[in-house]
Length: 108
Length: 121
Image (cartoon, rainbow over all chains, first blue to last red):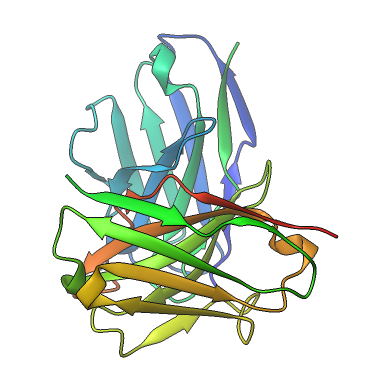
């Protein structure tokens, strides 16, 4: 099973600041099969990024993804008030599909 | 637009059974792989199972293998999760989710709003 470890657990930032979230895999993941999701309280997750760097439909360009092999990054260039949420990475390269434990981006 | 609506959640005693349903609309259901994913209260996401577009192949997470079974009825645009031998640790919100068109190598792009299953005596 591919274990995904996200860091940090919590990121305290102010609106307008840059957020950098990390996702590290226990074994190589083909970058074509790495996704990022955003989840707000009481809501289902929303797909942000797939294929490590491709934004899903309707996702603003302040969200970007990068990385390869075992290390992947989600960057939010300038935090908007609606971006404060929990973010999960997921690999869909191998079964079982696995998620990271999440990074909470909170208002400082 | 794509809609996934789960139903069938509720309170069940340990050892009991429950069958979750998911009604899909807004897309050609029979073309898509589908998954169940859950989230325990205050915890992260856990993938449980997926089923191919035709329903011919299924995969389950080890944590539920032998207890839970995913299935689908393409004529009724419906996805199911039969849950047996339920335990307290199965308490979670259960999400129905859409995967790829004729492929598993595609992200989960749509999620339902979830149905809460509570296992307690």
